[in-house]
Image (tube, rainbow, N blue to C red; front, side, top):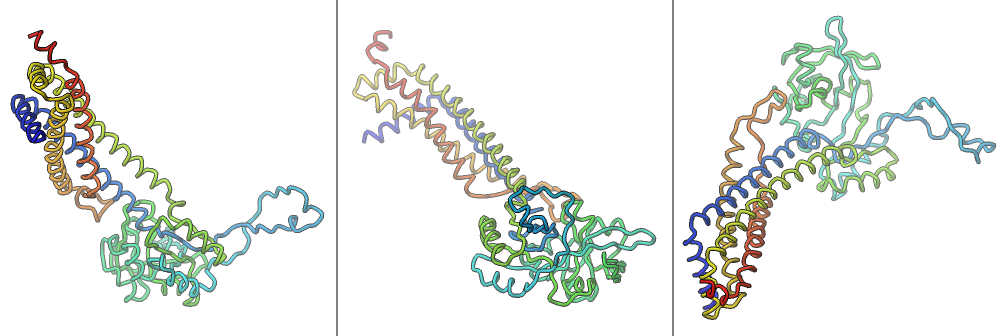
Length: 419
């Protein structure tokens, strides 16, 4: 009964000050709308920027690095074993670039429940022979189906069919930048020379465009068999093993585990691309900071409105306390007003925020650097709506708590005597 009465009194006070109540609710609505739209857009942009690199990067890459031999003759000498030896200008040793026993390694990785998929690759340094000019490039020999399944290869093939790499002998998908430099059309043949001096004519069956200009100027794709043929190697020859995990956060641990097991070099995505994750975290932090600032500002608006309401309703509060309402009841009345403003204003803000995100998602955004992107990216993660809704209630609660505390301490005798 008392709760119902408190709600009715709070409702009457809000209606009596309907303009101020509406202004406070609009402030909360605007803040939540901007909070949702800002977070959705900024995190959608984060996903886009990270995807340009991280979606095309294996969680773990196994390879044999070219590096100097760690066992130098002076370190093997008994005479100098207790000395600190400094050796300069050490040249890299002749090392095996291909991965030995790669079939057993791939089979072991595929049997690991933590591994989503494994894609072998061959990296070939080449020159494209265009008239009298040699244009440097890198050919990636891949298994087409696995490359597409794990790295969304087809999303970046902007012309032609990516499966032609498998079904067309001696074919190539050129990086868009390289194709433009050579003025190569689909169906043309380009001559490629490897660092070993092997030459091969390759038919252009498509263009690849990742959105990263430096990569598109250098990287092109051929099938695994074509890369092996260019190098004159057997069908078991590969230089890289690319691994995708179900949870990429496990990549540092698994890289270290398999590095010692297989005896080959391994890079994990979190170490190699730490700067991208840091950039995403900073952009998200800025988005949250701006959104929360908007909510805090709207909270101060509610605080001021309730303060003014208490000042103008001193006699009403005095009468309520005189007829038996306690200080806690008066405090609950004004907290109910604040929470009502926060609830309904926040609810409308969530709706308008969702509509704003839908509107942003439909704004055209086309650029040659990102051929697969047609509109602005937006992230509709429900987490942002939950954070916005909860924070609107928390902000308005504290905005109403301090004025209500002041109202609960009013002495009705002094107010009535003053009147």
